[in-house]
Image (tube, rainbow over all chains, first blue to last red; front, side):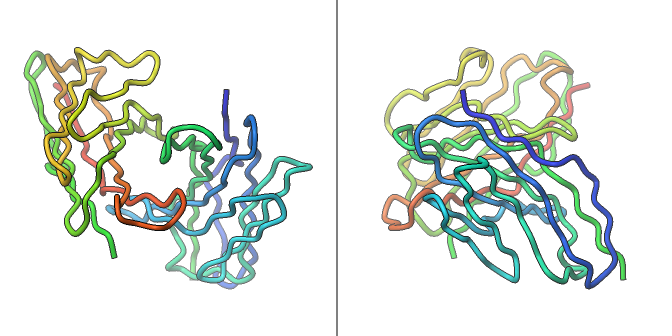
Length: 114
Length: 118
């Protein structure tokens, strides 16, 4: 079956530090890959996505590249801000399955200090 | 942008009672909604796919008689936890896909409902 593994948190950084949150996956076929962010008290929001190998998703300074050879989709940001503090989820949606059925990683809590 | 509202955001109930959670798409129609459950410090687990006008499709291991799902309109799906017990305490999250949307695999999530069963 499908699975997503994220690096365990929590991750604590100082403002302007470089961020990497690792994500690897197992899936059949050619899944689409996503990063979702959950701010305190809010629902999950799509941060970025990539639908095929070598695609790079980017949004709000965050980037992730779909690496089929390493089955990875690591999230990076060059300079984090306090407002980036949230829980980040890596997820996949398999091709050929019901649209919208997502398999999530366990989530990584990010805390950014001033 | 698309908004999904969940109500209530928090509910506390006694063991043995039933609790209903609503998921509404506020500015779009959704033929399909999804219900997830999130345990503390764990990932979201898909419970079921809610289909407007037809029966919900449950994931393996999810008791359909325990978690009743109704999707009576294009903007509303409800999850009823029947005869709730403390082990049902969890964070329940719904998501919906805009029927008229063109984006691939883009879902809108509700803010979640935290259920505590005493």
